[in-house]
Amino acid sequence: MENTFWTAFGASSLAALVTAVGIYTVRHFEAWARSNSIYFICFAAGVLISVSFLHIIPKSIEMNVHAPAYLLTGFVLMHLFNRFITAFVCERDPDSPYGIGLVSMIGIGFHSFIDGFVYSITFSVSIFTGVLAATGMVLHEFPEGIITYLLLLRGGFGKKVSLILAFFAASLISPLGMLVSWPYVSQINASLLGSLLALS
Image (tube, rainbow, N blue to C red):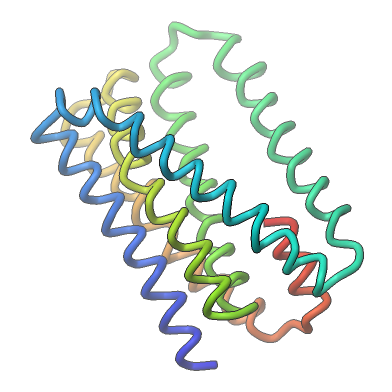
């Protein structure tokens, strides 16, 4: 169990490092980062979708027969959260710098915190499941760092403030989420772990 903890922590720390590299890249090579970040996003999305359908969903159903309900619940909750942010924040005052920068940063910070939970959950299932999930998740961290920094800049924040906020929200929060969730996730039974795997 101790080795599993360090593997999960190492994966979440690697994700933080890759995000920091994305932020560094956009600060020093902005034109290249802007023109190429879409390729990283598409590749990471493909890996995440493939891993979900080929391993994570079947594994969660194997562990808990009610996993499809949790899978649907997770999808619906994230969809509603996205619709809420879009309808009540972004569209209500689209010219507000906070609607672009600060709200996006909070959303990405929440997403990164949940990523930390996913590292705990997937590595608690098995090292193999954790490595598969971490591969897709780490790959999407590079463009996430770029996007967070650019959104904060567009929101009217200075370069130094954007750097600090992006680093905190997109990079440091993932290992924090893993550390917060690990003591609870590592103690639960296989059936509940299967439902959490489906939800995540």
